[in-house]
Length: 321
Ligand code: AKB
Image (cartoon, rainbow, N blue to C red; front, side, top):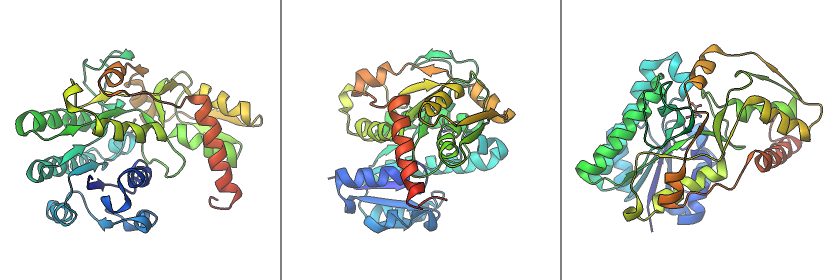
């Protein structure tokens, strides 16, 4: 049985990946960590939780040793829009957490997963059907960290045999923890606006296509890739994965079909627009499909049904205000 460490467990992905992995590997085999204990009260209810600043290598090692960890999920990152507000901080946190995860994986013989992103691509990458292997010259500090992370992870595999694997996640849409500071966040926030205020102000202009994925598919991607037969992997860091691509008016229409009074206006955020314009419209994820069986289950319609149902129920029960 694996002993898994999740670093940055209180964020959008971690808060759902922890219970997902607990169901598969057992509660005691999944150790959640975060710099902020307050965001992890729920996570600490069902399994081990430790406070960890991922930049503190000594404390990181202490936890790896204490729980005999053999697999690390490094989810620590400032996202794309926040990164542009403070590039030096993004560099420090994103690269610091990555380097500690890789070095500790090398020393303590752990497999390691660090998500990359559509943000690893840049304005000179092909925008449509963006290939697995192509030009990667990102124009954000977030993307620079992601490409560097991909290259370092492959280097650690080739040079030291560290079992490092990764996917390039698109915008992830979920109903448990809100993302923060990303360019794709609008595609989550729109559901809360639709249910609560029946209106939403979109920060990206009509026509801005971006890859997206519903959280259950993202969780499957993490597990499937880390469980994949290594002899089948021609790539490692990192695989294109996507489930759908849409632009703001399409998600608006999908919601409006279900909430006819829903209205949307645009107030374009120039930083988010510039970032989104530099990213793919949609990626080619055939390598992930061929090498480890990637096969997403959710599309815009089924995801919209589920998002409105789950978030609607939370408002109805008074769990959200
Ligand atoms: C962001 O928008 O920064 C993230 C991402 C696509 O990596 N959601």
